Image (cartoon, rainbow, N blue to C red):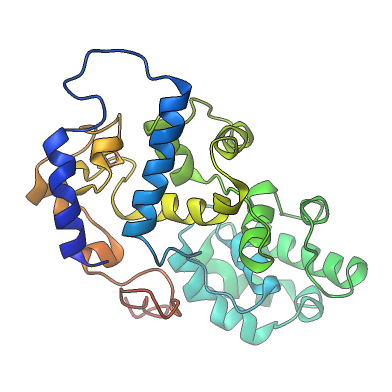
Length: 280
Ligand code: SF4
């Protein structure tokens, strides 16, 4: 989806001025919210048909490691770090036997590198000793691995094993609260309430679409409401910039004509790949 797509969708959205604009303040029924939520999901599927996990990975182990590294940093920074990491330690056996100083040095750009190195070595040793060197495909097993919480486990299950899962990160939580799908702050409660709105088959792609939207258009501090294709469905329309030209300047990644976060994006990604570490 290029900028043209954003522009053409925006028209109807800004014309209505957001969900509920100009209507009497009548509380939305649960059924109406569910219908609106499902419509948002359908619209986002049209805007981001290429939505995908924004971590580069070639197998479940690489996705698990990349997801652990992604705490408190950007997927871009992780993607710029993992080529050297997986060249040095391609398997759990290799990573479990790493010299800690060397491993720490490689992952230093992702921050919190000492704690992350401990997690990576610990989870690699557990994979080697308890799971025959393979990443398990069950939530109950994954969350027992050092440094692996429910969010990381759901990312791995959804994207490496095809098990439907909702991934509640900072973007997902912020957007679904703006859309009044939930008022919960606790990620597990958010996950449960959003899961109840959608069929299981939608969970993984819904997660990607929402995160894509949060990273490109519905930013934390300056949402680009004036360039938002779902403005007419959004109760928070107006929280950000509503002037279309100013809003357009706030768009990020492929929506703004910039590189994405993956150095190896999927073939259908319409944007440019991210640069390697040190290149920009
Ligand atoms: S940018 Fe976010 S807050 Fe603004 S209309 Fe779109 S979804 Fe709503």
